[in-house]
Image (cartoon, rainbow, N blue to C red):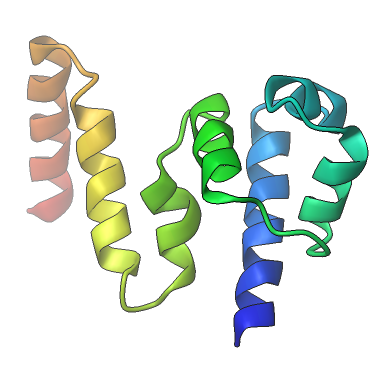
Length: 108
């Protein structure tokens, strides 16, 4: 099971890097690592430390919950809730009102 979690995390790290239009070299520089290290992480050969995961989450504008928490099915719902709360906390009051209206339309 542990190796499948590492592989899933490696895929998620690669996905986030690509979604944020970052190269392995850019991530390596930002994390004070080598491009080879980032390549090994993305291929599941090396696991990131908690410190590196934290910096990577910040670099890709995500949370540790959404980065790591989604890998465990029994933690998935909490991670999603936390990610939503994190995103909502950045909205202005007007944006929050628009979001409420949109959510009401979806749930009616």
